[in-house]
Image (cartoon, rainbow, N blue to C red; front, side, top):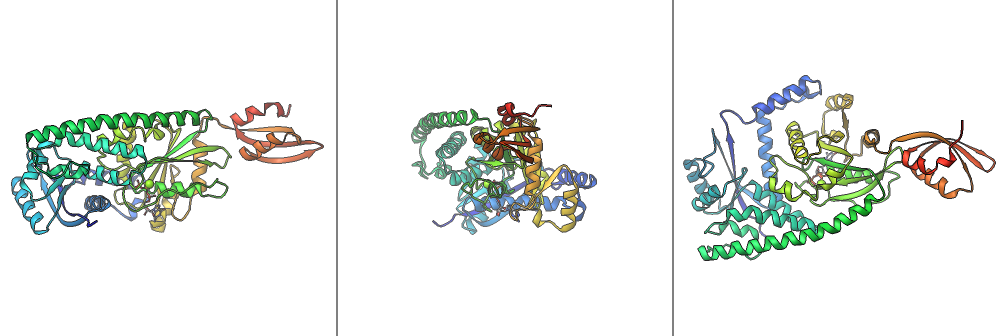
Length: 449
Ligand SMILES: Nc1nc2c(ncn2[C@@H]2O[C@H](COP(=O)(O)OP(=O)(O)OP(=O)(O)O)[C@@H](O)[C@H]2O)c(=O)[nH]1
Ligand SMILES: [Mg+2]
């Protein structure tokens, strides 16, 4: 498939550079001694990396950048977002760059979308549609695909216009024809029917997932969820942790420089240094201005996050906008009502930082600096997870177990840290550190006195 040529449009609102407040936030973090002084990140840099992020989104959607246009204006034009002079310029640039599509790094109201489509010689899509498109490309499971299609249709329905140009995005039959009003009504009804059908199918898929979860929860294993900005390295960390020595082999998940590589949640059991097992989950990443429709439709996917006892917030230490990314992630966590859970902050990609900065980070007790790629800092991270789990705490006890109790000994061997083991006749006497639930099962072996 030939990739589409895209005209990228960004608009800075407000009087000055968009990044002023962001710069101030970073200055505070420098003052807090987090070692940021080595590489000050000013607002220009923040803005550049937002542009870069937008370009990456566009390439992740499979398009190539044909041209870019920027505008700064105090506030959005209700009719066309950008001013009328700019619309003319856009039309000219789109024509000369032979753009197939103009992509705005903002959301457009149905009116703005219609007016821009009328004025430009190509299709127009907004930021939410762009992200939905990437999601659609990357969804692998049935549930993921259903969720994205539903979100796409719900977003598009109010944006259906008589022109129909916007609809070519949807594939699935509704082409680029210019439907008249009757055709438009038919399309609307058809979409509404499809929406109903998708809701039904999703309901069914979710019932199965709920059953699976119930079965899982009948054996209580604490859940730990990796969360974070897209591309922070969650999947790489997931693979690194599940591949560590002593872990049972799991199929690796996809690591990719593309944004939103992961859509569908993936779970794997891992063992912590205390020998306690937890269920680790990798899931969809977040982004600045994550479309609300996506948060809602991915609520079920994000259920792993809502059910987790501990959240591991994976951050890209090398990103120029890492502090802004952190704030964005916390916004979504708030929306999911999980800000109250214990949260471990991991600064990943530490391998990309200069030595002084890395040293400063590792001195900060609030953070765990790791490199998922180089497998550095993982042991410390597992210890932190251990420490954060309060459900089923680790207790230390002295046990005396008959050697004939093979099952009990094997279970302790697998689930506890054992020291001072002494054999006395047919008894094994030992000190074990293990989750309270495991020790509870072998209360009868407790050494008296
Ligand atoms: N240098 C370096 N690169 C890393 C590290 N961890 C991940 N990466 C790279 O960062 C990119 C994104 O990694 P992923 O693990 O796919 O990121 P993710 O958070 O799962 O991203 P999404 O699923 O898209 O939200 C890939 O190109 C990885 O190779 C690291 O510790 N150091
Ligand atoms: Mg991923």
